[in-house]
Length: 352
Ligand SMILES: NC(=O)c1ccc[n+]([C@@H]2O[C@H](COP(=O)([O-])OP(=O)(O)OC[C@H]3O[C@@H](n4cnc5c(N)ncnc54)[C@H](OP(=O)(O)O)[C@@H]3O)[C@@H](O)[C@H]2O)c1
Image (cartoon, rainbow, N blue to C red):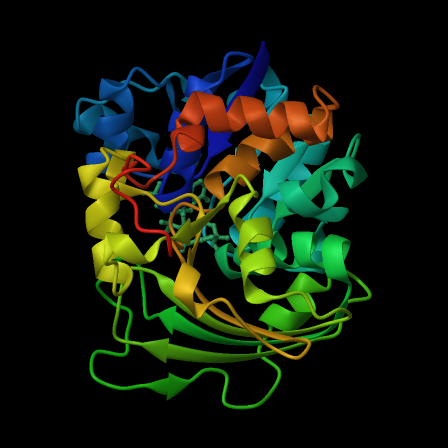
């Protein structure tokens, strides 16, 4: 069993902890928190050992009646690998501690690429991180773009990607984020950081990205144009995207007109926390004009990186090859069951 420590138990950390626990070849050693709050008591209720991330704050846990298993250094020492899901920048500060205990660690997309040995996306570069000490699972947006680029690059070749990212202002619990009533070019100058970030996975890819921020918490929305090196028809591209295990091509008949409806579907499907681990691509938006592909995809910022973290654990430790790991992760999390309710052939119109 691979023993995994989780340092930073917020939006990403708690989801990764649950996903790791579901894996047949992994166990959670424990999770580290800086303070007692609803997430700390939630972790204890789930049976995760809780470690104190900041020594001076340990008495706060005792005052709140929450038992602590030890200090974060003990968690790091006892783990085969640590998933660091601390706020941006703190992962870089923690790198020294991971090195001191000779424990490999996964940082998240909020960290700078120059802090780590390599960046990771399971579909795109699984085989490149084995044996590395510090690996960054790229951000939610970069994960979504990489999953799209990989099959297009392999099948047709890519001349250029142009992507406009309409980003949610904050996650639902981030009460201090915005905008509340505005539409912000963000950043206002080009390129947004996302294009260069995709280049950490695809170094030679020509990609320009523009970013906006809007008053929404549900998902990001990408408006995509890819100039291919071939001229397949739209149906062929759609088939290719449908064949990928972490892209959900939304059939027209589902009537999903936006991110709100996708979240509702995820709730109806019984997904934990209404999470959507897949890229959600509107089927009817997949269009070809000559060699130019156009489509819209929605990305659930809180959860698309979760299966990627699970795969990164195996990839770094050399515990499984790419296909084995992705299949194992998808099966254990229930991702392979898909999001859409199925319909019989008799019910489905020919244009689905
Ligand atoms: N949310 C997203 O949309 C998203 C998507 C992809 C990637 N990411 C990346 O994932 C990373 C984590 O983001 P997040 O959204 O999960 O942040 P988050 O919700 O703020 O969770 C991070 C948690 O880390 C804890 N923490 C703070 N300082 C710590 C320390 N020194 N040691 C251990 N724990 C500490 C905080 O909890 P306590 O202080 O209560 O312990 C906080 O809840 C960032 O790099 C981010 O860029 C985020």
